[in-house]
Length: 212
Image (cartoon, rainbow, N blue to C red; front, side, top):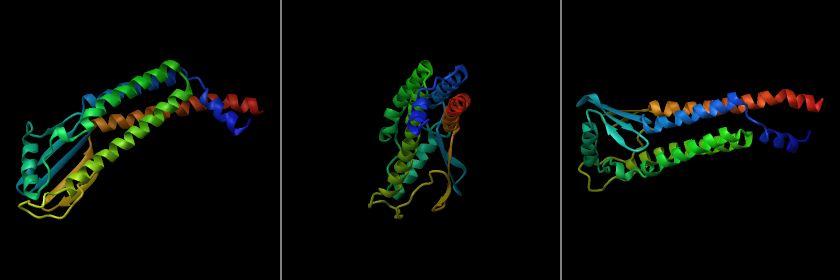
């Protein structure tokens, strides 16, 4: 069997009930973007020993202490010439919920059709979406830290807030980590990968039989 024949055979594989169920569960995991925060940033300083917290959802920003923390962060940003953190400036909030909904429908379509070709398509599409979303988040942080007003009361050099992990900025210790929603979205990758591997393993004995 040639490489082209093997590739065609792979894409024409049929998914069994177990693999279709994994895709359906992955679709349910996508709903976390409407319910749970995707990322959390926390800032500590001597004047803020309890920290200033901000959760980033797919459609909104939510500050700690019933939104007061974002107001405090924006006051601090004003002194160094950084733009205020407002939902209107996050274009991701406008398209992400709709894109996730569309991807969920494609997941269900792949489960209904039950073909490896459809599963590979949605797995590649979802990987691209996840990578682009992470890049968009990093670029947004970069833009906020590098587009500082020259008339600011306090002069600081351009900086990059941490995308993941810890970073000290002036007298602030900033922590940036995935929140619950991102872990569910990572689980989607695991479920899709498991469905792909199981479908391939189910067909492996048949390929060996044909070649022998």
